[in-house]
Image (cartoon, rainbow, N blue to C red):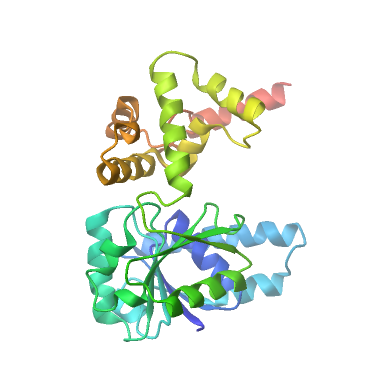
Length: 296
């Protein structure tokens, strides 16, 4: 199983492609936007350069990794010889269902279909295909090249053979696979998102400011990153989507998104990806920080 197709060239997709290519898999990276594909390759190259500078890999190893990746804007061409497809598109149910219907049509009958969804039912996604036994969740953590965990989620019809194959592949990527049952949010986001949502509620209610909330969680709870900074890193739109999936799935008000989160997403304040969320990531702000550093 050496031909891996990755659907989506965004943050998660390029990270997944990077990890597979670095471990000598042939990767077909697919996105409808050539610009997104070009940015993805540039990001992967930059991350590999960082590893070269730290002497973790050689220049030759970097080049071999990049040579393992081929880009496509046509899904049918990109998945023609894939043994495994990992879908890493936007966390949107309708989009994912369309992608899996297309994959079921375009892929060979024995191709395994995995989704990197962080919250959506694997059983529901598998149901739109003619091969539900070959559909599985393969939820990588961000940033993919660094984080060790992969949540492996079996749908109702996922076969043990599919699970064992994906578990073995995860281990070959030097990841630690953890089996999780198919419930909204799985484990990681079922625990993480209510914490982030509560941090936003705490800000919304005026209990403390952004930096103060994050400082309490970093210094008091030994978290490497505060929940509001982490929300910016994940993307506030992604956080909102996951909370909505859990709220609709469990019908429990504890998963209802905070109105502040809803308003920020509506205003396109999405975190790092938009340049502003709970923190300011704009170029002018970066310049101000640099000037302050030199002033010291």
